[in-house]
Amino acid sequence: MIKACLFDLDGVIVDTAKYHYIAWRELANELGFEFTETDNERLKGVSRMTSLNILLEIGGVNLSDEEKLRLAEKKNENYRTFILKMQPDEILDGAKELLLELKDKGVKIALGSASKNAMTILDRLELTHLFEAIIDGTKVSKAKPDPEVFLKGAEALGVKPEECVVFEDAEAGVEAALAGQMRCVGIGSTDVLGKANLVIDGLHQMSYKKLMELN
Image 1: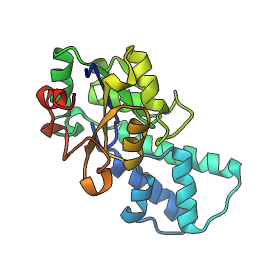
Image 2: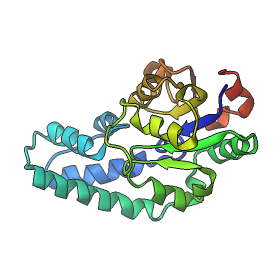
Image 3: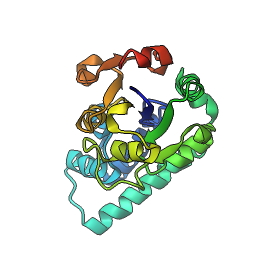
Image 4: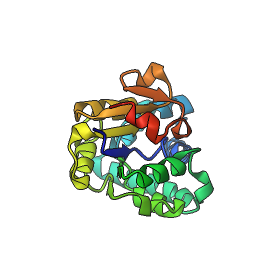
């Protein structure tokens, strides 16, 4: 029986990918190379330091660990200037409506995101109160496809993994959900997210009734 839903943040509830991309592109430009939107696809669903390593690999740049930490922090500061201006109208279509419906039906809700800025974003979107647990990048040590973030979410909600459904837009996130013995709804393309139990275009296509059909 499905008792809980765990949501990724970026690409599921809100699209912050554009802000990440601009911040990474600015960093690449400073380092003297171009970073394209196609390159940016490789950063989807991975941690900040892993993203930086991919970016440096694309640019053929070698740096010390100390310099990498400085650049990762700089990228985050640039990114935060964007998200601190976010408004509730940036919530993706159907996301708030689904969260409210699930809450009304007694389904437990948690966030499972690699983002260390998740609390800031939820506060800006005025959604924080809808989540009973928030597991973000400050609370996990292993990146997706490791299931740690979702297993911690289930634990925080007091439910078993098999009682959870995860909503994810990244292949690594789908793999993390399945590795954690949870069902998964992919948000995006079946070409990328085909391993998910169900793939939809966005949360506007989801409802409590459709969720229960995954039982």
